[in-house]
Length: 87
Image 1 (tube, rainbow, N blue to C red):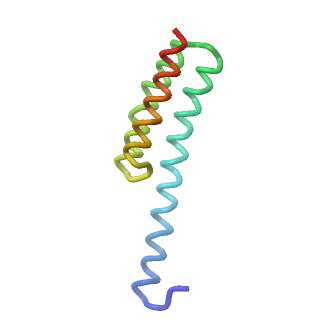
Image 2: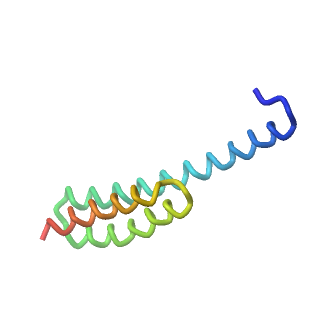
């Protein structure tokens, strides 16, 4: 456990930051799930709309440090290729 006052403060800061990052990660995963559900449903128009909403959300997660930028790009690329393959 933290002993110094600065270490105790860092524990408090990390807890707050963890909660924020958890919400951001959850939000990103929700958007990805919507795209995957539209793909599974076979509705290309809905899948494209969901992808259009998910792409900035994934890149926002990259900008906030939730994902590495290559991971974010890979996720967007794989989702878009799956949507494109529906045509």
